[in-house]
Image (cartoon, rainbow, N blue to C red; front, side):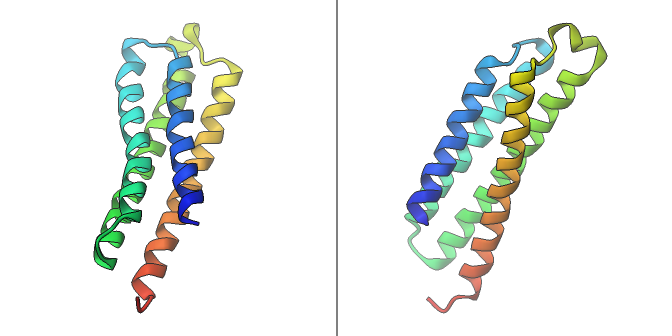
Length: 128
């Protein structure tokens, strides 16, 4: 599971970078794009770090960071979606492909948060 989730979180970060490259870079979207790239890449980097944790407590703490960064990524994805749906920005509208990718990445964010929460609970409950 560890390697599978490492690959999945890295793919998530790369997919987010691809989405951000395709989004219109307007004053209204620039901040959200930058924050989204930062938080999504942090999901991958911190999960990788968690797998190298020095102790159970370190592993659990780093998974907490992964959870927070994944949740923040979801927030910035929602912001991009909502900015794109505002009438005054519709002239540069998010095309259907970008909207579909936003929806897919929001779902992936929800799944990553759920996996991380479950992993932290399991780690806390285990005797190792």
